[in-house]
Image (cartoon, rainbow, N blue to C red; front, top):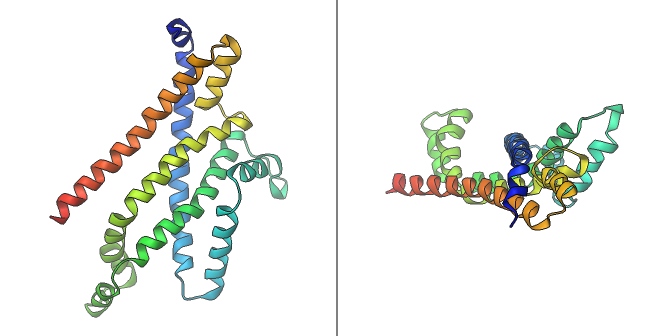
Length: 216
């Protein structure tokens, strides 16, 4: 392992890691918001809304993230032109929202109907019922698959390097193009990705531990 090569390109890796972190966190937030809306639409009593939400999930769960990425960057409809970062963020958000919506929907459906009926009997409105009864219980169930999906999103963010977003993977490619040191460039990139995903896994562990304490 050539430590001099690693130290020479360390600023480039750190800059790329910051971009990876930024686009991943923003995509997770956007995908969560979109996924929650899609989940509610799939649970709607209005057939048109359910059908639209089903089509969204069907299309984006069944097509590759790369296809969405290329479509938004190279063939954006209505004559729009998106920057590489915005196209990457939008593609990750839209694609992941289809998976997150199913995770959230499963959590919402798992809440006992008896508790919801009890909330109705004491006069809670739909928003109070959602905030006090449904969401708190659903969070306990969806936390593991939700954070697993976030880990996958962070790793899959490497795909945005294809459209020249200056993320960690593109930093590794540039370092390799200059040094031709495969082990060093890929090794450092892998170590940084592992560090970031480990933080998410630790976050999951702490949340689950806290939830176990609360239940006791």
